[in-house]
Length: 387
Image (cartoon, rainbow, N blue to C red; front, side, top):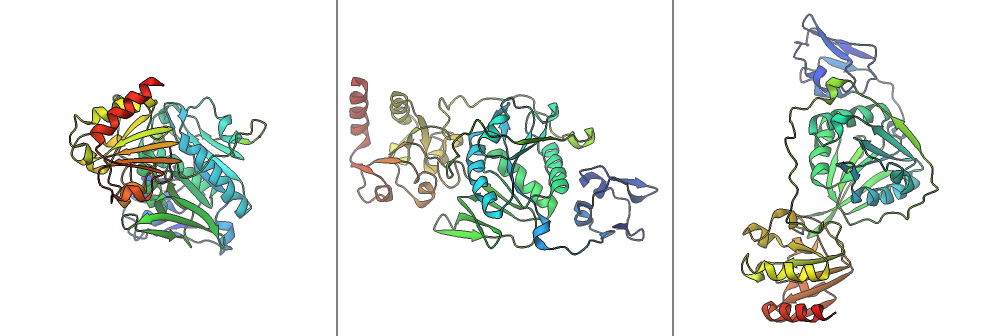
């Protein structure tokens, strides 16, 4: 049961703006709850005057959440690679919890069957033109509405620019916990055990959310493995719709400008050549670009190289940049600080080129070359051209 304490309510309208179902109106300066209220509790937690009180039956903890959800991030109609990695891990978590795995998709995507074939039992789809491009306001409203209606136990997303922007806002509105940039997930005593690097990667912190639901986290790209695609797998598709006022955004996308400096997507690349401050200047990054082009790979940069403006931030690899897991990673003039190693140490083969034989990068590489990069890189290029 929900009650409005009229003596406390001043008709500010905060509850109206946060309600994902449009179930509250202001009449004669007082909040009034309509019949379509489902007691989700967002209005109660958002009211600073404590004018809204919800009386709930005491239920067992296990009833507070049902299922594991994965946010199926899409950009311009294409499902992002990190989603399939999360479905693989989500399948494992759901099996341990004995529940179903669901994917949540906002916007228009043609190949929705992929989400089921890579592990999802159910799809929640809100197919509206206004959700084609990511906008914080409508995406937050829709996700909060779906969560309040279906009440998942666990909800995970990729630690992408969208995930890092959207999930904190959703968690804040729902008054639940959020762990960012996780590198490991597991189930322990029925709770989501979330592992992430802390203190510059010097320790791995394990975090749990005991009482709030859903348990939410963002997960780094390329740290988990997708399942093998099962084209015969079948699933349930649930289509939802929201009132127009919940899909309004305070921002407008004027234009989308593609990063033309990335000939190959660094997050998906099988080969990456990464340059550090040992290159000495922005002009010398041409050596890295030429080597990457010969190998058909992508160009990366250390934080030091990005900070001095030698390469755009979109190429940064490390704790404050992107996590990558290519088949071949060539670090040129990169010292190998712990913050950088966090973002690339899971690469299948690591080759390091540095004149400092004591550089930390040699502690993680498979092949190390101690020498002058300005002599070594031209020799490598010559040999590659012969192939």
